Image (cartoon, rainbow, N blue to C red; front, side):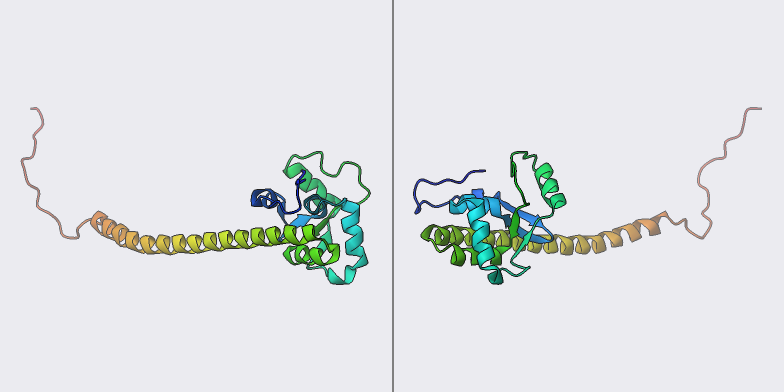
Length: 178
């Protein structure tokens, strides 16, 4: 996936950024390979900058994918071209890790790219929060209507119970042929 832009000031479409955000180990992350494309640097340059400043990237900011995670990710998205020949699996950066990258890459482009990435993460959080709110409202409605329908079902059950007193038969008894 290439994100090459003609000018440093060109805005990156948020859809491109969104397509590179994955949910791994219970966190939304971006991979070093995609970030390198966005920042217009070689992946090894990005990783070297991180390793030179490793104290800025605790485990909750960045982690390296296992072979198994990387293979699952590739097969899940059916993208065989990811990574090509590589010595190591990519690194995954959380939102905080991505924010820290602009300080270690120290370029105008890194700052501009990070601003767009942060906006995308915020928008995703808002969408998720709106969906959670909608889900809660649906649950509340379901509970409310379940209670209303229970009254209806109880009334139907009451109607289905036969009356205790014997009813007089109305009509004629049919006599069989003689």
